[in-house]
Length: 205
Image 1 (cartoon, rainbow, N blue to C red):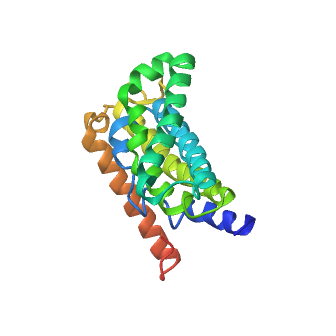
Image 2: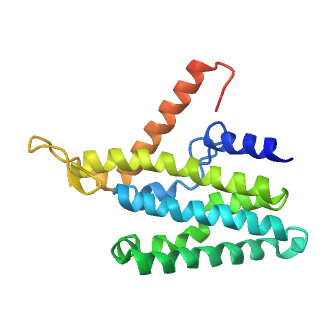
């Protein structure tokens, strides 16, 4: 264990063990929030906060949690941090909070958070759990950010809410709809897998 293991975990979760394009977890978020970049980044920040701190908390408590109630303990800890995110968002960014609606609360059910709690937090020391939580959140976030940029540009002709495409551009209606999210995610996964296979025939993803 130690810093070397934490560093390895961190980089693996950004690449060959990425929760989205390798483990294919948390993809419902692509349907919910990736049509506008600002909303996507806020949701990603909330997930990174929740994943990192819930991992550390559960890791610190791992020897005191009876196996029979471990999942209830995980949900309780995760819910506490999600409530903090929801309260802060409503106080500091009420407009974004209203736009995201119930999706902030649904961070509790995000399978990335539960998956990392089961796979790492309950079996690793706090430093490794923190590295795993932060990197899993970042690995999730950059995938969603790329998808959100493309969807907002193609679907609305805007970037960060500002019009960047000229009058010549015809918005792609499908990009602001649910199928557009999964279409872009599929293209992203295909591109990453193809790039990995080209660079490392033995597989880097």
